[in-house]
Structures are given as structure tokens and as C-alpha cells.
Length: 132
Image (cartoon, rainbow, N blue to C red; front, side, top):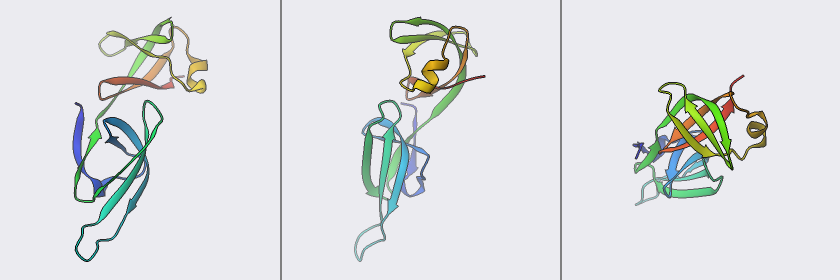
């Protein structure tokens, strides 16, 4: 797995975290004060990076949580194969297929030969934007 540990108290809105095995973008963080005998808790809410599902966890602020390592690179659209897009990595010229992006803004700009920015998160790929 391409993750690293991080203390839950250091997680900020806009960062990424793994919740239930799915990488999520953090949209809300609430920290409660310590009680008389307890430790401070952090409630972290995230939106799934690939599926868009809302997930939340409650953990002590000193607990370690998994943070995905994100690799960003440029790729070129080679072909459209059914509901998939075939891309060629411009760093090592390897080709791979990923599902067609759900976002209409990205989908409408895709055509063969166009360069796109791809994020690799936990072994899965997603087109983030079309390069102009």
C-alpha cells in the first residue's frame, strides 16, 4: 500500500486520509476537548476520492491514521476503449487503461492526443484535469 502514518490531530481540511480502505479528501475536522479521564477525540469526515461516498471516523487525536501517497504525472490520451480511456505515461511511455472520468467538465475536453494530469492513489488512477 502506498500510505504513510500520520497523527489524527495533524489532519487538516483539504488533505487526504484513508477511511475504510478508501482514499478520501477531508472536508470536515472536529476536535473535542479532553474529558476528566479521557483523551481528545477527532471526528474526520471525508469524501471518497474515487467513488464520491461520504465517510467519517472518530479517533483519538494522538492515534495514527493512514494518509495516501499521491503521485502526479502527465499522460496522453491514446484511445477510447468502451467506457475506458487508454493513456500513455509521458515519463516512461507505459500505457494503461482507466475508467472514463465522471466529471462532465473533464469528459467534454477529452480527445485523442490531449495531455492530461493523472493522480495515482493507492495503485488506482484518476484524471484530474486536462492540460491546455
